[in-house]
Image 1 (cartoon, rainbow, N blue to C red):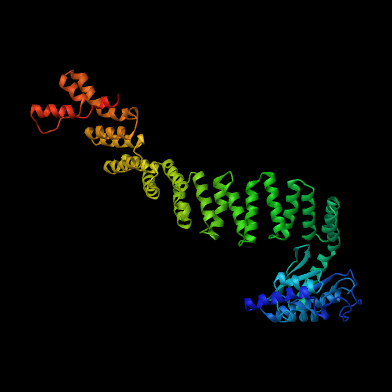
Image 2 (image 1 turned 180 degrees about the vertical axis):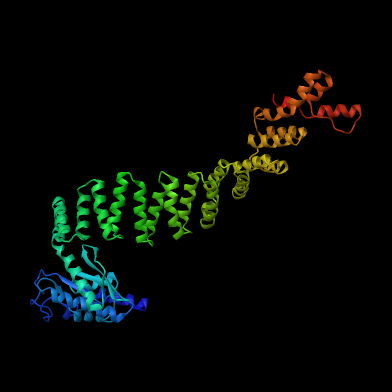
Length: 512
């Protein structure tokens, strides 16, 4: 349908028919003899062949008509009853569809339900340089699930010629249906060993069967068979139907049970690609990749997914973590920037900055450490660790004035933190400011910092003077060692006495 609204309304129409019952002409019972063999029996399976999907609407109608005709000619009504075209058209028109509408799989199954179809043929018909190509599949409902049996594509010079091969493919597949149905019945009766035997008979009857193998897979799972047995059947199904979700799920679980994480993840990726709109599947794939033991291998698995979803925050975060684990620090910094733009909440988190700074330190990347520490100290102005780290970075770069400003900022936030005062005093000592060192020590002690935590910093001021005094043994050098330097301006004896009495304690006295 061209209009989504009209398609939705039509689908609702088919659903309404499921509640009200199909039109009289579509009811089971006496029907006009369109097939040899008289009327279908109660147990006779019905097969529905509606208009095939095609870019050429007429080709879709003609191809379906030819396949329907071939089935009617090759099978008696009591063996396999082909749903009449007029019943299909009547039901479609009553539901708001055109009679020549090509339905999607779910609508086909609903239409089949109204017309008592056991089997449904869904197909695509296309024109080729040499004629017509039909790509069919057989569908049936088991419980709440719709199962699909892929059939080989058939080429022909026209729709009628191609229909011959399609009919043969359908008839071959139906040969395996009797043992398949017995397998399903045994499953429901919890006769799992018998179900496996039935499935083997189904495979013998139709070697390309997906349905009997699916039944065997369910029976083996219920029997808690080995992972190898389950993987073998699942792989056989996937060889025929690469997107079969049931087989892929079982195969992934079997690989996990065997401890083959790499193949389990590869299988989960196949599931994701079969249904890329399912966020639950994508999330499971990403989580398993993140838990994978080898980060280098995991990154190789993740990269193709990221090409398809370059802005997915979970995938980016997993890539970032894997790069950190693989010690690919430079790449991790690039991924981290991308992640911070996509997921601003995480990009502003403590975890992000702590791990990024740790990576920069491991990479001995001083410039990156300083950059990240500066960003973190702005995002978390009360977090002393980032400011201290920034201070250290400035010191290593010889940027003492910036280091002193950063250290003083830390003392204002946490005046009792000994480390921040040690940074202040150490920087002042490097700047040859002994008086400032002593003044800072006094402020630190006044703020409640223990004296013994400042001893090492003060020793840097006292040690040179003490060494000189010990070498010269001069009184004036000992006097200079015990107190700060005199002011450069001379003063009167009285003034000097006053100043001496009011001078701050020496470095040695502060540590006692």
